[in-house]
Image (tube, rainbow, N blue to C red; front, side):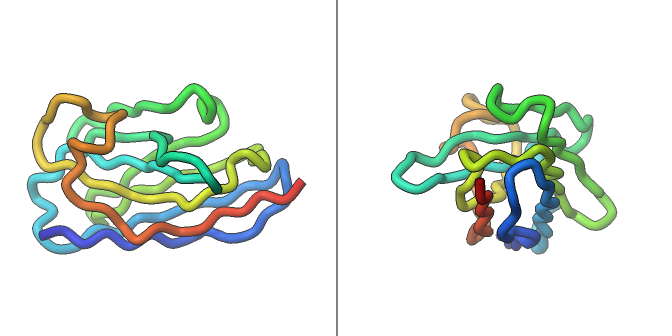
Length: 126
């Protein structure tokens, strides 16, 4: 089992920045990819960004490319999401997810991810 705990959410004005963290614990040794998803009010959960655990290859949704940066600290089993130039449409609950081993659909689909955090709220005011 792997436990994921997100932190760093909050309220920020448009144009501001936030940094989300996701700390993993438990059986993390076979982590393949870690991702961030979000679910806005009345919307379906969507892919935001992902990073492969060993090679550090990154992936981004078009809507956040150039504004968000995903990074990792293997020693701390932690993945980060630096969010700059935030927009009101970025308002959502942000979820961290972990996938063990390569699966079809990584990194954009939800189904290949094995573990999920509880989510952290990000609210961007106009």
